Image: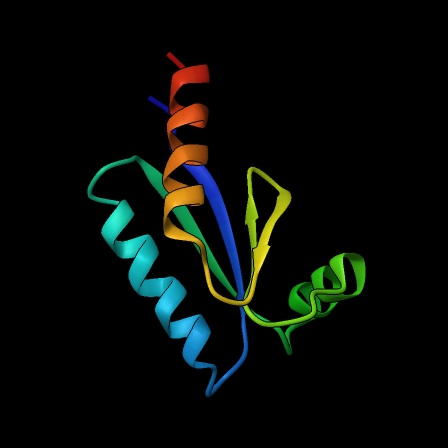
Length: 89
């Protein structure tokens, strides 16, 4: 099964960013994930921030679309990953 693509746009010193990484590590045990961490200060990160204009960090994209900003909602993400996995069976 093809993994779900998650992009995590982070800034240094961001505790919510670290929490999101931990959540994604946990969920990688349940779902096939391809996680890319992008620094907000990089050209790609700056472009994503300009496009989505998140109120808080981190910005989380699922399958190339904005999923959340700020604290990553575990239950919502688990449900969305199950839907992605179900669509790929």
